[in-house]
Image: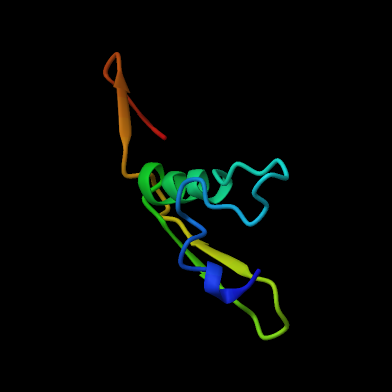
Length: 75
């Protein structure tokens, strides 16, 4: 993937395969799950040999808790 696309990859509907079946939602969904639901961070980097790497950091516990019948469940 060209590095010029790195700034846009987490945007909804961004795709490099327009008209070839890609809808551009994959990394957008992943970004929202990692940063929103799980309370982590995600970073895109380019190694020297090409391609790209995703670095995901997650907390040991989720920031969101559900309560039901006096019990607490963490997502």
